[in-house]
Image 1 (spheres, rainbow, N blue to C red):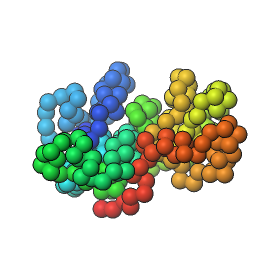
Image 2 (image 1 turned 180 degrees about the horizontal axis):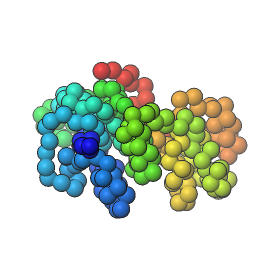
Image 3 (image 1 turned 120 degrees about the vertical axis):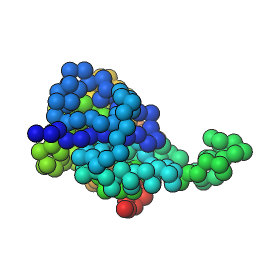
Image 4 (image 1 turned 135 degrees about the horizontal axis):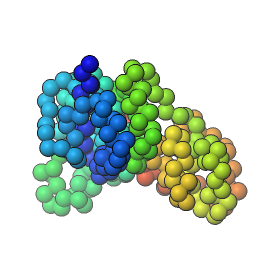
Length: 249
């Protein structure tokens, strides 16, 4: 039986999520036993322009050319997977949306900025239909494997819609707030096994917000520890500035 043809594509990103996959070690060999990777710029030079069973997308969409390219990839792909914060939420690139486009383009490109077409940053699902999401910056390897298994079995993968705090408690971590450090775990969707907190870091909100955050509880926590709401909102903006854009396509 032929293995499904899969290709990796990158848009505006650091390509860290693809590097994460390239560094899977022996697990990558297991993946290659079940899919045929026909394009993956990080690890091979071959290109493929035929029909794909699986397109795996990293990066946000922020140019007219990128819009055309992602639509073309979607048109020739049976299944499309968005991986990493840039693809699933717009990522840190979404901060650009805070500023007028001419202003931010001029800051980056100087007097020739009009030579570089740009649009507001969008997550992939705000341009085309996405079948599976693997959130995070970078992605959590076990979740990528779980999503890959789900798509190969043609079953849904439901991203947890409860906060990272749930996983953090199950892992027996001391709350970062109790350690005098602010953390976005209370409003960030789980699925990473509280990876950052397990390794003595805070949650930066890279998996996006839960759909129905406990705002009252979060405000109580903020007040209890003498933090400002503005400070928490500023932290949230690092990965969540594309939330207000309406998905289309």
